[in-house]
Image 1 (cartoon, rainbow over the protein chains, first blue to last red):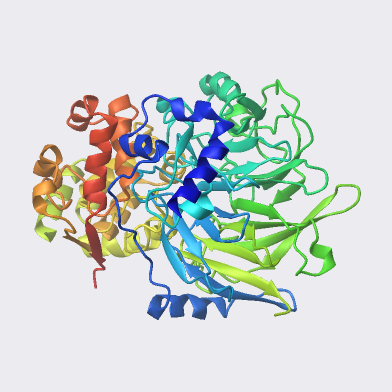
Image 2 (cartoon, rainbow over the protein chains, first blue to last red):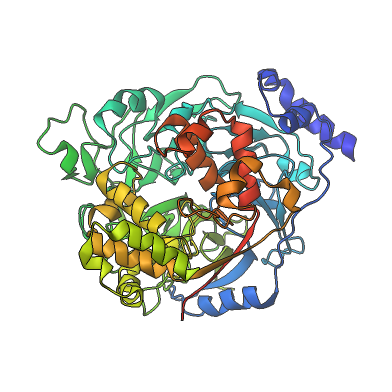
Length: 417
Length: 193
């Protein structure tokens, strides 16, 4: 059994031998890169039933959806952030803004997870928010300032010792003096070109002038891409404030992404953004624009030195559009084919909270995008959050998962079951 | 406990006579309303709802006042807190500090006390309940929050006469180990009646 794993992974790594040669790897990563054991044998398991799960199920009774859809508790997952469904459908990997990555398994395929345990428990993670899978089963985890690569993760994850390598070594994603806690929840996805695309939020409310040069050069406040052996890094997108969700249109291959906009300008401006990028190097307006066509106070009246792409959808101000996925399944009605399902985390300083819902965006033949609420009800009558959706992922059966980092849960939305 | 923070508050408020004449209970009641702006991240009881926010329930009022004032004046910066604090008056800061400090924080170790970092424990306590007036509680904070703050002190992004010097020579590994210790402590916050 173990031999099989090794041959799978070694075979995969022959194509990218540079990965194993990075210097200064932490000791356990060094061991895992050499297929050695670390001595860590214990997983942390999360209880799935009980009062806590019952409380979440009760809250879900309040959630409204279009006719024919239903939402159910899929798994209890503390601090659940962005999700990556394994290409074989075996495991769903879930990131957090803390130090854990969770592996969620539905063993009996009754569409409710049976087991939630920590992934690669011997490794020390820092804000491992963004997992993504390649089609051939390589798992990438984008952290605050590192990207790790796990070959054949859907097999290895059953053991505490998972083969692991640096894609981007600690400190090489951004300079250490640019690190922050907020706005460093990275998201990654594999593009149709086979490259990995990683969002890099910039740490300020409005990026100060002295940071524009480094941000532009490194793709901070942008999206970078690179080959899956870590070479060929380039800045694909500029002028983002803090994007925490992106995906590629299933037919055009274009990159679409959400962006969180400037705070402190009032309850109703600026709008949030859903953006469509049609070419490499496009600029989306930050810091000259605070969201949509609203100019920031800090740069008011100044000439904008770049050509700016306006959002495809100007979304509700402060609703915090985060994770998104294009729907390619067969379970939902035809109007949802190639639509975007996205999560609004909910506002943090608006007088009356807005967001905390799942949105759906349909795109017509001319490329016009229309966004509307799909699942809502996580803000109660007192303005208190019962849950805060973060990301959407699609299961192989065509149902979708919704993560919630306040409740610490993943929900499943299905149609016609 | 309460006596301690009233003393601290009294000392700080000599400059602001309007606040000094009000009973803490009235300030806390006013502060509870202001805390509506804080609760999405810090919780209404001061037990944080998101990892990037620290727990502030049961924190000394003087610490909360100093930090909010620093955010407002720009001597400490954070892209969310700088926005929030800009809107607050001295009275509102004193009130919201009174609200959050009126709760009680209790810490329970989940590991043997001998593992506590000596360098930190004299001020922040073995269990992360601060032993001196000037220091914040660290019990149960997300390890990455503590890690971030120590690195900010090391880089000079955040300044404090004691912490800047302590953090200056720490390695990334030491910082993470200290953060992991306090992050592992179980924190409970009991709301004031």
